[in-house]
Length: 187
Length: 174
Image (spheres, rainbow over the protein chains, first blue to last red):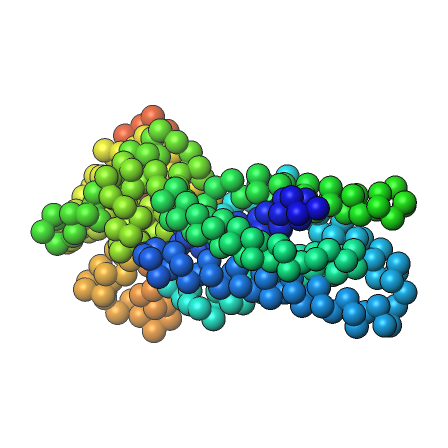
């Protein structure tokens, strides 16, 4: 379970990874500050939204039947997986253009936008009843490490492999959703 | 020429020019340009916002340098660099995207014409048409002519261009 969760969250980090890599390619300078603070913001917001999703389950289960919430969470994850898979197969041109206006505020906004899947994954994990305390710190470190690497890769090599990363995320989410459906006996 | 423009800026422009002869423009990354120039990304961003900006600087450099030196209406000077880099311009004309190469050409030719008008324009239709409007009008015409010439094997015939510029629409009607 622990390994599966780690693999899932590696997959979930990919959209933020794409975003931060593209950002790295548009920054004039990526010093230690950018290399630590931007990944830290992304990793922290990822974890916060994951925890919000995880703990919101208690509220949702009070309103809806547990199985209904569970299925909704799986369907949303599945849809998101398909979305990323589709995104990975469509050719998209990214132009490396100097971003003079990038600051912490924009960074936080982008981190929130790319953390919605973490929120949904948090809901699913909450419903399944996985003890998240065991993995939360590992997930945070993993995300932080991946993003720190991504911003450096983006700066040095430019934004590349976006399609590949989107496919990885899509596959991870779909496989995870299928696992849950199998667990429910609906597959 | 070199004194007025930064050596690094020219170096980056030449790197893009070289890279475009080897690789399609849409596949060129900032890293490719930087590798060719032997600089880091920060240096590129110190001079240009993106590769389109750099490409525009090449056109500007090719056209303006001779013009600024001679400050002459003689289009021979303006298009000398284009004639010397015809192969590059054939490739560059394929560039589309946020700003097409055609637009870059028109903008840069218009800048030169506007400068000429600011210094040498008489009062003919001065209230009817602004310098900028006329500059863009003639720039579009010249760009069309230059485009035809770039994709042909002929030498640029300035007398034909002058003939075209001096003719009005009504001259072509019966």
